[in-house]
Amino acid sequence: MISGAPVILSNETGSFPFSVLAERHPAIIRQVREAIPYGPQQHLALDALLDSCTKGVVEALPGDSWEAWGIGEFVGRSWFDVPWLWSESYFYRRLLDAVGYFGDGPWRGIDPFRPSKLAELESRETDEELAALDELGSLPVEEQGAALLHGSLWGNRADLGFRLSDSDAEGRDAVSDLVADDSDAFWSSVGGTLAVIADNAGRELIPDLLLIAHLLEHGRIERAVLHVKPYPYYVSDATTADVVDALRRLVRAPGEAAAYGRRLWDAMGDGRLDVRAHPFFCAPLPYADLPDDLRAELAGATLTVLKGDLNYRRLVGDRRWPPTTPFAEATGYFPGPVAALRTLKSEVITGLDAATEAALVGAQGQRWRTGGTHALIQVRP
Figure (cartoon, rainbow, N blue to C red):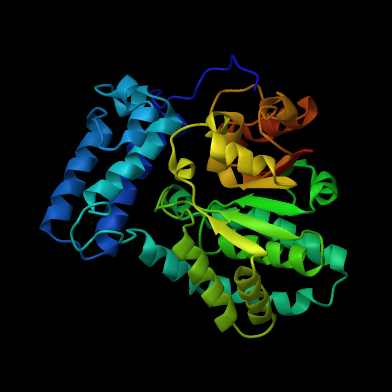
């Protein structure tokens, strides 16, 4: 990977990363508190976390992984003065500790974000999106694939954490707002084994699964490996339990959606669709630091697709790159062909041509980077 661009911090008042730590994280704590009937112990711990994340400093955490992930370097420093990617991941780990997710009591393993995830799966919007599959079957196969690829891309607008800080984002017309479109390279790169590093559950995970089903059904790939988080992370990030919920939602749906769900269910049973949950997917580190076992696994994929904004930040490095930095250079370290499907919700960006950047800045200043109204499909074959 090329280097030299400064790492993004959160200590500039008024910046987007600052707003995430100062505004979004407190909102997430309130959401968790209201969604689940926790007891006094959890409420006291959430109060302490709220005070710490807005005014306190990084504290030590149990577990060898956090030592390996660099916590010793940051203990005693303000959350706002450490790398933004690191402090966000640290917040979610602290949140899980506060509600007893890793403890030995009755709250062990209870996903604090599950009520929101389930509500999204059962929403009217999900019903409408699944009903649209009945019309999709009348299109030529190539058009079906293109529609499902864009469904997977724009499904990222359903990110629950993002909507907490920008409730109007999903209603905007973003159909034509691709800042980079390597769709042709995507279709020429798929085949063999497809690795998909998932982002959000619910209404984003379902389109990801539908795209996988299409690729399997039409012989574009032989098998797919879906990489999810080993435990809850970033509000709506997908875990194995969320994959199960999504498949159950599909097979219960009317019409063509159930057929998609059944094909995926069968693919799970015969190994053509596999689910993995490596601990590194909850690490506060860029993918340049992939552990050897995960690096070797991804090296064996014909193409690895990374979904969403957080995965993009980890792929290219959460740095203030000049937007014209070539995507291929920023991802040159990755162990195999790689594609990014991302709705823009943070400042980091690579791979733009100068004319596109100038037009975006001229029309919107820098808002296009963080508002969820623009997206990209980037491929390094």
